[in-house]
Length: 189
Image 1 (cartoon, rainbow, N blue to C red):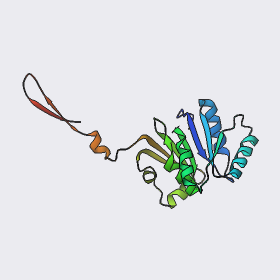
Image 2 (cartoon, rainbow, N blue to C red):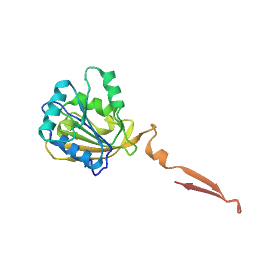
Image 3 (cartoon, rainbow, N blue to C red):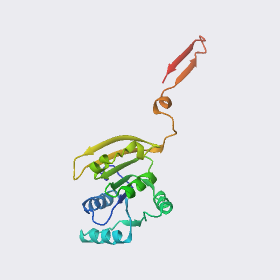
Image 4 (tube, rainbow, N blue to C red):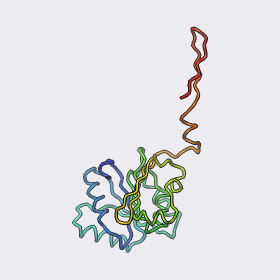
C-alpha cells in the first residue's frame, strides 16, 4: 500500500514484543519507491530489539530509528514535528498513549497522508475517533479491515482547516453584471 501511494517518507511506531512483518513490508516498499523509512520507538530496549529483528529478516537497508521518550512530552512533540512531509504512517493502538502522541504531532506531506492503525478493534472499544484525533484536519476516508485484530486505515488531508465548515467555504454567490444590457446575474457556486 505504501508503494502504491508512492510515499517519500514512511514512518512507523514499534514497541518491543510486536511482530516485525509490517516493518519488513514497509522496508521493501521503501526500496521500491526510494523512500525514507523511519521507525519511532519508545525506548532504547525497543530500538535494539527492532534492529535485531530486522537484521534477522535479512533486510539489506535498515530503517532509521528515533527514540521518543513517552515521559518527556515537549521533547516528543519536537521530535515528531521535525519529520516534515510524512506520506504514510503506521501506528499500533496497543501502545495507546504513544500512538496518540504520534498522531497528534504528525506533520503530513502536501498530498496528505495514509494513516494505518493496527489493533483497530481495541481502538474502537476505547471510543477513539479519527475526526477527534485530527480535529484540525479533514479525514477524507476511513476503512476498517478485519485483519489480525483490526486494521484501521484513514486518508487525512494535508492542509489544516481554518475552522470554517466545508459547505460554507465551497459554496458562494457570484454577482456578474452584463456591461451591454446592464442585467445583473447572480450565480451560486
